[in-house]
Image 1 (cartoon, rainbow, N blue to C red):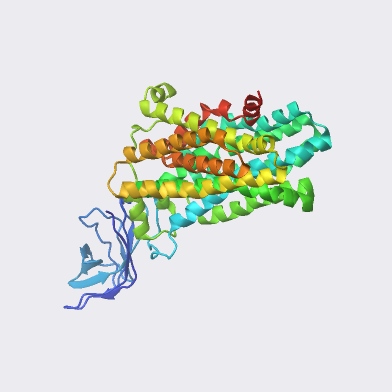
Image 2: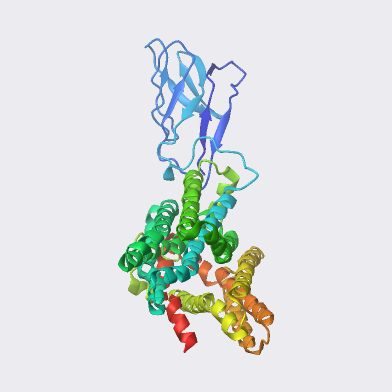
Amino acid sequence: MASIRSCVSVKPAAAASPVKYRSARVGAAGLEPRGLRLSCSCSSSSSSSLASGSDGRRDVGCASSSGRGNGVVGLVGNGWWGRRGGQRVVAMCSAGMEGVRHGAAAASVPAASAVPERAKVVALVAAVMLLCNADRVVMSVAVVPFAAQYGWSSSFLGIVQSSFLWGYVFSSMVGGALADRYGGKKVMAGAAALWSLATFLTPWAASQSTIMLLAIRALFGLAEGVAFPTMSTFLPKWFPTHERATAVGISMGGFHLGNVISFLATPIIMSHIGLTGTFAFFASLGYLWLSVWLLNVESDPLDSCTISKSELQLILAGRSASKVQGSKFPSLRELLSKIEMWAIIVANVVNNWGYFVLLSWMPVYFKTVYNVNLKQAAWFSAIPWAVMALSGYVAGASADFLIKSGFSIALVRKIMQSIGFIGPGVSLLCLRFAQTPSVAAVLMTIALSLSSFSQAGYFCNVQDIAPKYAGSLHGESTNSIISTQDPHHSNELLGS
């Protein structure tokens, strides 16, 4: 472990009393100096050029008013000492961070704060995931008044809704690779700025032409396709393995709450400030988040100036080793030769097929089967998503508790994924026996709540097997299921 000291006083050494001085230490695994530049000021009235010590530190000089004599430098306790002409001088030195890997920290590390840095990080990730989903849903609500205003047909409505995926399919894999290379902070910031701009421009594009609207919606999908792969890159850097599922649960909880908030708030906002004002409101929230994100978050805790030493050591000690070896991202052929990759792809397909069918179908189901009005249908549809946000956190905390208790990571992921598949399947099979909308809502809530256990299963498994390339792997697996996520296509299947 490297230790870098910043020293502050310069005094002649007494015969039997060592000089006391303040020293701030920076030490963490991976912060290894490759030659430090040190400069010393001593109180002697002569000038010496002190030779490098035997421990590998270099460029040590002692400056004063006279230019005669030679000196010798060494290390005494926590200070540097020099000998010139029989006079022993202890010099307090200032050590720069030149040559320290990652350019990580300042010489002074903050004391542990009441709120850990990773708690701030996961709160901001959950917030941006909430906005990511809320901005999607606002178009789902606004598309009805748009259709009435511009005379869109039902088939064109489906094209407008699916145009989101035209951009999404290209950016999910590219965005993951960018996040792996340049860090999650920059990529997530760029994505949020772009999708907020597309959200703001949507009403204007609709008033111009259908081509312009479809282009803006594709741009919106292009920006949002980056969010999940970037999250998969970002969280493993900030959270040790035994906290990762909880972090994913909180982040995905924000995503699910975006459904609830946007479904319930958009009609109210729209009734007060109109279509254009509603899109502008959600876009402004994105830029507000962006300003907080850029000022308070780094891609890696090693680059943070506000993280405490103890928290940094906890994160670094808990990072998992990647099973993907080498400095280059493996080829698609090599990835598809691994059984772990196929397990993630299949789990992703099954999970997302059920998720997006329920997301698109649920309001229609309550309206057509139980003949509830649209306002009631919105509430029946919102409750399961709200509970899912909470259950995702419970699933993550449970998985992390099992890992801390000594269960293997692979076993815990399998247990969580089994609950995430079997539980919803049984609940939806029971749905055919529901006689009232209240019973149906309870079964839907159970299904979605148990489905959230997949977040502590395959979703975390991407980060477990290749944390260095988690964004790229997430993008690869997402590209394999884009066709299953078209809500218009899902509605056609359910209606046939």
